[in-house]
Length: 252
Image (tube, rainbow, N blue to C red):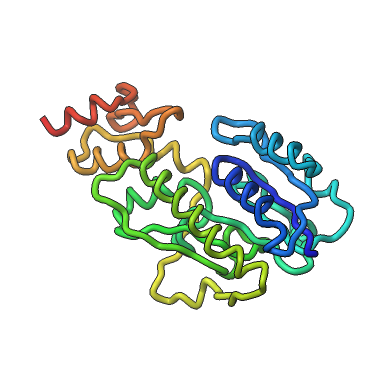
């Protein structure tokens, strides 16, 4: 029986944890620990802890509390970056679900940048964890078309459902060692990008001088309740916070 430690949170983390528990026998695994995210607006940490405790799986606050090596580390929307020594606790694989296509959108706020870039395709990826952020070889992925005029919340929801499908389709092969590793650099036709968490603040500054099309595109890419909405600026001067009614008024 292969041992697994789960790290993560949010709705997709809850889905993944439930899947691991439900199919432990058929996957030939045993979940020996759960490490939830800290608390934030979308963390689902309370639900993750409830699922673990209901199934009598130990809950830890940090991977350093797990003294023994494990076969697999499964990270799904985990909010900390693991060190090389922490990653090395996994004897077989340490893997991460990144809800974006790789190597195009490594890092944070991938949904917003994809909409601002106006790309037609998005995706979700299971990859090996390495010291670099979202840089490890790709194990499995799903790609799909982005509908026209999509808002960032809609793209998030689509990616969430595609990520659930990815987990369901790939985990049986993953735990049966039926996979190949594909270095991200092997995909020469794909661009490569990385974005940091704090970049979202500049994206939310919509300039009064922009064309209507650009204003709408940046609004769709950054309007994501319950987070703070984008704002209208005249260069460095704040004018007002923006609402969905303002967005609709651009068509009038």
